[in-house]
Every structure is written in structure tokens, then in C-alpha cells.
Length: 136
Image (cartoon, rainbow, N blue to C red; front, side, top):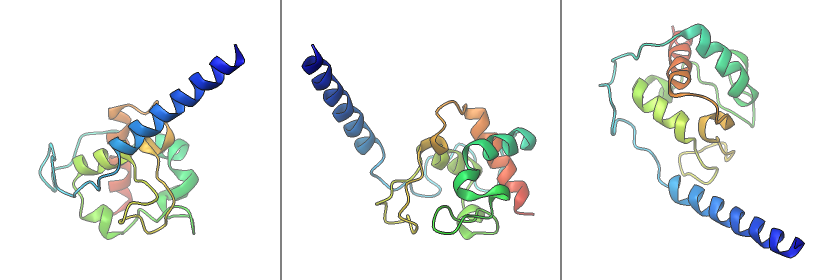
């Protein structure tokens, strides 16, 4: 019985790995598939975004999104944040970035949804609204 469970676990891990690799090996181009044109802000709750950011993103990007050396980059005043539309930023957070992505300069994986699968689409929008507020 334990052998069957072992191989079932191995099979499950293999499938999960394959789905992750297939779903996230492409670099998301900025500006593609955007539901809103660049510069059009999404409606959201910055206070909820701050709470969700603190719980899901701050462990790598730091309190106030100022970054943590050798872990997560600052998200304040960076060209990446300033040059991406809200809709594309939501999509980026939803997908994450693999460690081997050519655009990943830290070589640390950013998990999809910051590693918090409970974040809703509105939570992601709220996080983006919070991050936009930090840019001012």
C-alpha cells in the first residue's frame, strides 16, 4: 500500500511540476492583453491592498515595498512599476516570475500571487492601487 501511495505522490508532483513549467515559462510582455490602456487606473481599495501586500508580498519586497537586499526588489520609484499598466501589473502578480526568467535579475522566484493562492482578483487590484499610491 505504501508503494502505491509513494508512486501516486510522485505522479502528482510530476504533473504539478509540468503544469507549472508549461504555464509560466514565457516572459509576459508589458502592454500585451491589457484590459485597460496604459495610464488608466483600476478601481481598488488601497487600505486592503496595503494589508494584503503586508501579508503576501512584504516578506520579499519589504514593508512599504522598499525591497529587501538579495530577495525582492524595491517597488517604489522603479521603471518597471512606472512603465506597466495597472492591468498588466495585476496579470504579472497573478502569474509571478520564475527564477530562470531572463528578466529576473535577483534569480529568486516570485511565486504566483506572491505565494498566496487565497488572493482574489480584487485583492490583486487592491495591491496594485496600494503600490501606485507609494509612487507619489
